[in-house]
Amino acid sequence: MDAPPIKICLVCSHGGHLNEMQQLLPAFEGHETFYFTYDAATTRLLDRAYLAPNMARNPVELLKNLVRVTRIFRKERPDLIVSTGAEIALPAVFIGKLFRIPVLYIECGAQVVRPSFTGRIMYWIADEFYIQWPELRRVYGSRARLQGSLIDEGRLP
Image 1 (cartoon, rainbow, N blue to C red):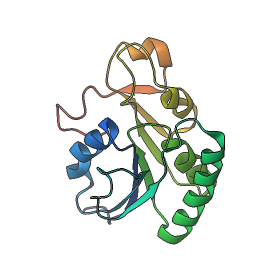
Image 2 (image 1 turned 180 degrees about the vertical axis):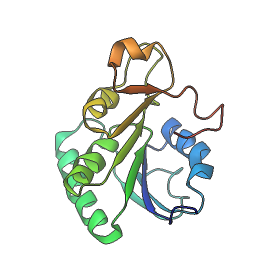
Image 3 (image 1 turned 45 degrees about the vertical axis):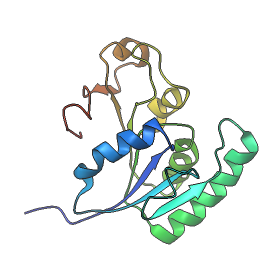
């Protein structure tokens, strides 16, 4: 018997992380999804997207996004958060943890041997943490699960 559908919050930025998330969409078929992402020309075209100004590493914008995400999660009640990276993941995952929502993080911002800023934080707080390059095992540690290229192989953990 198939598992019942769940509601998934997809968190990514407006460029490469969005492209990778869109490549993963077939894995979420049969489930209800919505986005929390930056406001940009590429994301305004998405169905069911909550758009936020690009916060980069601005602490004031981070706080504003913490409030935004709290309101969104109270309304949407997601069962799972999936992120492919960028700083936009930080407020979603922090609030998600308060709501006890499981987090699956896929390190897409790393450059083979150099982890991303967001990945360094997510490694410690995501429930599942996946890397795409074996070289990152030495950098991150044992919690990082090597999945290989999720896009090229068409797999999701």
